[in-house]
Length: 398
Image (cartoon, rainbow, N blue to C red; front, side, top):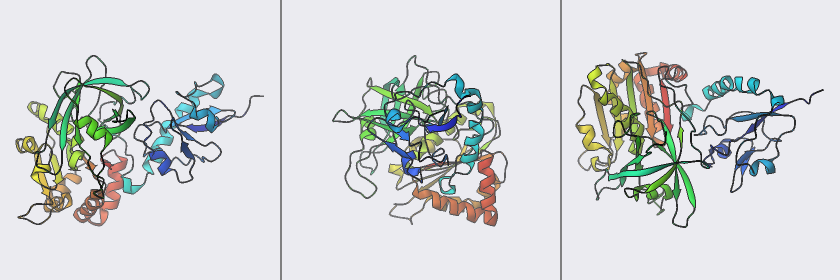
């Protein structure tokens, strides 16, 4: 008689970027790590799946049916997941994962915005083609400072060329940069892609990133961000190791007539630029659909892409800028601009072809939620749930 199989929760070491999100999220401390791998303790894990949605790469969503669970010490030595055996009934196991993932994604914490399904018309995303152990190599094709030398933020537009290496990305996806520190150590950081699917330069196999050089932490203490400084210091011709692409939810709808409400601060502009540029390049097709962008910064000098934004035609996009540190006017944040445009915002939200995207600093999320609630009234809670479950409400805040 065959041994009874159990479904064991594992972490794929090839896709995991060691960001510690899963360990911080797990409510029962069932996840641990060493200098090599993050692993799940089989004797503690109760398959609550609280860790599934926050994982940026999907590495946490790995399973095997086994007669005897793999021990922690064994998992810590892995370079790859063990091969599924015939006795494990892999067809049955993999068939039930999508439904389970969708169920727990829908139950993700409301404060995080949850993990919504992608827009129904979004193109199929490729995810995890390259890992930390088998990365793609890109070449720096351009590194342009977007903010003035005297501005408080040093933000760069960086173009990475993949040559003949296949690295297909969609608007809203991200990639992982494997950065080398001054001491030779490697650090991995996620960045949203700032270019549309046909490349920063159309017809070329390249992507762009929007990167702010980190020189202090959120408390204002001096600190040198390893990955941001690595990227901002790149010179043309430098090589960069990249894992990804990642992201299968925060995607742009393809169907003509879809409206986008985009709310962002700082480098959260990256996916919004990708989506806007996609639409700009297709203006001649007259596909319809409205774009509305609420973009916040301290001053115009600290706003990435300020110049190009001002040159976009009003027939393409309604740009609403909010500045919080101007000497000649009161502080204004993105939620204030949303309230000022309440009538149009409410009209778009009521349209079933409208999709909402939030990206930027975590602290803006609460203010944006409050503005939506004020604009929509008592029905906002139900509306947000419906928007999210139908793939029309997406949040990436950090």
